[in-house]
Amino acid sequence: MLGRKKGFSASQSKRMSKRMQSSTVGSHVVRDAPARRGKHAPSNASSVDFANMRRANKATRGYVSHVGTSAQSGESDSAYSRRVSRLGYVQEIQRKARHRRILFFALVAVLVVAVAAGVGAYTYFSSSDSKLALGSSNAKEALIAPAEGEPYYVLCAAELGSAAKARGAATDAYLLVRVDEGARVLSFASIPANLDMRLSDGKDHPLYDARGLGGDAELIRQVAKLAEVDVAHFAATDEEGLSGMVDAVGGVALTLAEEVDDPRAGTVVLPAGEQTLGGDEALVYLRALNFSGGFDAASANRVAFTLALAQRALASEGLSFASLVGEAGDYLSCDFTSSQLIALGDALRPLDQVTTYVCALPGYATDAAEPLFEYYEDEWADMLARFKAGEDPAIVDSSAAGVNPAEVTVEVRNGAGTTGAAGRLGEMLASAGFKVEGTGNVDDGTVYPETFVIYKDGAYEGAAKAVARAASGGRVINGGDFYTFDTNVLVIIGKDWMPVS
Image (cartoon, rainbow, N blue to C red; front, side):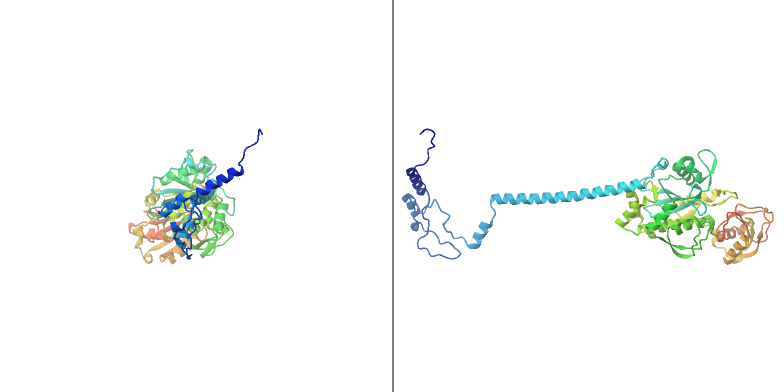
């Protein structure tokens, strides 16, 4: 019939079956072979049946061309177990592919973690740098990068405010810091904000007017001119920033040389001795000026505070210090990046093993409603040379070193118009061992803006310098015949001398 698919007939299927049987091994079972545990009995060609006589004859002569799966060999159980446990080719390919997938996912996980850490670090530094940035300040116009590996200078400005008035330019405090990371030396020079200087407009101003006249760049240029250096970095803060920094590190520990009680600084009184200052107490300490050493003593206090604050911050290592640096932008602004601040901290740690020097611009405040500070150019030149050389800038005169106070007679006269000033200074000098033979007011009724320590005989120049040191201030001069006195040294107290309150 057309369209019918032709299949195998019964006779064809029978013939095909016989052909297949004739081409395969027969029973392949060992006859009468004793079974042995662990080994298959050896085959004997004469005892193996074949469906084809030709193959049987070959087997008799030692040839067997087909061995079925039921054949036994001399393989031991352990060898057999190892052989069958070996992976096949396909399984080996699958195993290697699986290992590659595991390795790939592990590498992806490591890459994800690295990228996350990188993104986190980038976010941290970007955020920190953004907060630290000077913003609208034009300070960078006046900053000059130092040579690689050389010492550099940092100008720090702070608006301290006062108990009487809100913060403003007149309450500024300036520190010029020489940083020598290689030698691990920090030198601080305190510059009074009311320093009389000629600014870029060609007129004389107090230094604190510089920022109002030409921004931070004007201030930086004026300080750089005064110190004859290039300023590389600038940092600025205010009273809220200072208070916040102190509280952020948990307070600043200091040893106060004398009691702090200045109504212009605040209502808080800080007793002498060891103190841990919080934010409010720190502001009073930094503002106070009525110390026996005047501006020099106030400058030393501000440097001591700066170092103590830095020491407290550097005591936090690793992530804690990095966290503090990240928060620093909440309290100050500067041209440093967070990575530069971290590197600087690492270079100076431990801070108590860093050599530090402190000096203040030598001079006096004029007698005026708004006093201006006039500096001694010769003394500043000597001090500046040591400051820039990384040496102790404090003026040390060997001629005063060998003076025996008990052999020096002193007369003290009050030319400041401040009641009791001569008596108080006389007591200070007497306690230092000098022979104070008289105190009182000047005879001419003049108000002296500056304190003078006067000698007439050149033999007593060293004695006069020793008196000035004990008085914590005063310009030493040779009075010649201009002044009349019978003692070795005459002290005329000016408006710049501030007795202990």
